[in-house]
Length: 129
Image (cartoon, rainbow, N blue to C red; front, side):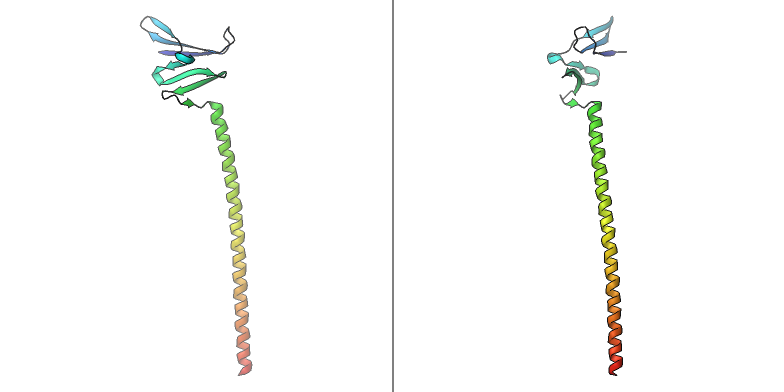
């Protein structure tokens, strides 16, 4: 294995630490964190360090990568919003169906009223003739 990283949360100092080794010509060579405690994982373009007691990763541009818990929280929020949108859409669909049913009922009532009016006009013509 050309590169090893160990996350030691049980170090003797009580502080978590990163241990890294890279394969060299005569065995493994220990790597030390760069400035501000960041350890460069050159083969994959990442930097690791502990921030507020949690392991953090940054890409080569310095952007912090999200951890599993953050991704899961975002997914839960997304799922909740999707459920709310679905409930809203279902409510809108139900309201639309009710409006369509009411429109059909009113159209039928108009047709029936028009038919009665025509029948009444026909009776009046019959009576006059």
